Length: 97
Image (cartoon, rainbow, N blue to C red):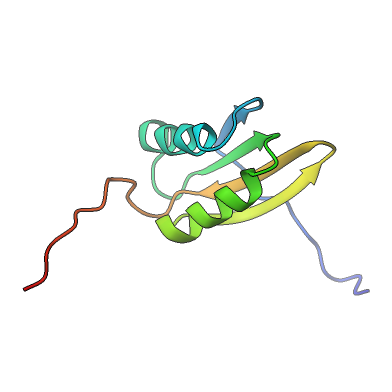
């Protein structure tokens, strides 16, 4: 193991406690919070205990263009650090000619 590697937890501008929320309500709460309370480049620390939260939030970040900076378990809790990167406005679908 390399001793010169230093792992750091990202610093968060915001905190969101989603204990007792279950998917899809958990994901809806994250989207609403990020739309209303966050600007691009800000980081939120999310704490959840839903067993589906890791897969749901990973997939949502990948699909929406947000950056999942870190994710880990802390006892029975899941902790996520997500940076807002892109617009969270609904996607406008345009029919191609």
